[in-house]
Length: 208
Image (cartoon, rainbow, N blue to C red):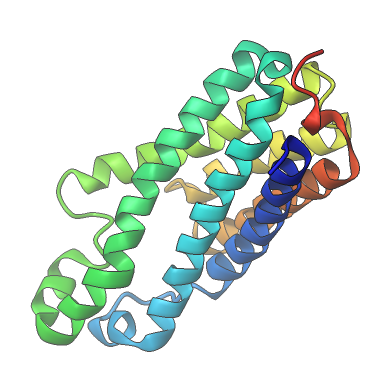
């Protein structure tokens, strides 16, 4: 594997991640009843979201590594932030795919009391924090890539706006429809970044 092959694979992963993210958020069930969480569609949607997280993190890492010097301090801060945020999100997603459906089918009283788990104990603090770290991280990384002439300015600006809008959509002020729309926009920004990486040699250059 050479650097060109790795970055192309990372770009492709980012494209698939964006598609999976948009679909999983738009299709996410609205009601969190035990019957909904125990259903196969719940598992499918959250498994797809897990795919989005894994490919998004792998793809972003593959694109950041050869561009770290040009992305500068903004890029590094953004990458570290999104890495931590996405790892925390994956922890809850693991629960939603493998544990919550079992609880819903066998111990529905737990779901009645705690829902899908995002308001359970300390998760109520760390899950929103993970979202903030992720969206701010992608905004900062896009800004670093833009300053370093790695990512075209229109794509970088779109990523920054979409990431910040997604953060608002996930907040209590956003609401369900806003979250779905901004998730789709953020997914589209990931796709645009992946397409730009496929078309440009900038992501394959380790130095300025």
